[in-house]
Amino acid sequence: MRKKIVAGNWKMNTLLKDGMELAKAVEKLEKEKRSDALVIIAPPYTHLSRVNDLIDSVKLSAQNCASEESGAYTGEVSPDMLVSAGVEYVIIGHSERRSYYGEDNELLNKKTKLALSKGLKPIFCCGEVLEEREGGALFDVIREQLNVGLADLTKEDISRVVIAYEPVWAIGTGVVATPDQAQEMHKFIRDLLVDLFDKKVAENMTILYGGSCKPSNASELFANPDVDGGLIGGAALKAEDFLAIVNSY
Ligand code: 13P
Image 1: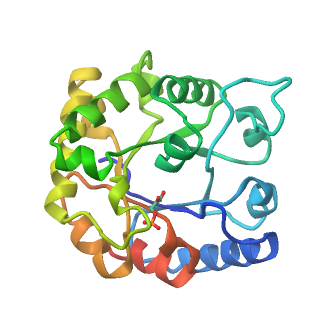
Image 2: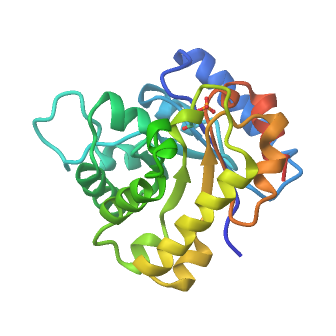
């Protein structure tokens, strides 16, 4: 049985004090959850170490990491630093990193391999923009993102990766993918994993959906056989909403 996960990506939101309150509230509600989904939160870098002291059942993720191990890279945060702050997961290749910071598939592959070598579990994001979907290139785009982004990973490596499918047109727009659109792409990704690795890897892979997922639409998305949870943005900033999504299972 593959793991169900609901992860909250806080993006560049909350000051330290509010972030600590939110983490405490998520931890408290997680204890009462009615679902077996693993709950992960990804606060900003500045909050990680403090938040780590406040959570136990809830797991900690960073939103990004450096592609280099250490040294003269001003402003970067290395995987080792994240591990030393208690971080277990790291989001890699979010569409905002791809589009605003020019992170390409090769760089994301480098980050993924480095993060894995340091013991982190990557939440590797992929997703197409609206023009790519409308122009019919959506499957080629996702294939390329995963072919290159997950290149050279061993089967042991890939067993520690979570994939998040986040159609860019659904992120922060209020336009959610239909359950059929989500299922179609998640199935495509799982089939691709059979080609890239093998059937066992594909069957065990947790594939999350992200993009305008809310308490009101989570259960119909999660009801799909290949949707194993969600990567939540806006709705993860309120503990009640976030846990309502977790309880949608
Ligand atoms: P929203 O849930 O705000 O659309 O964001 C999704 C996302 O980007 C999560 O990483």
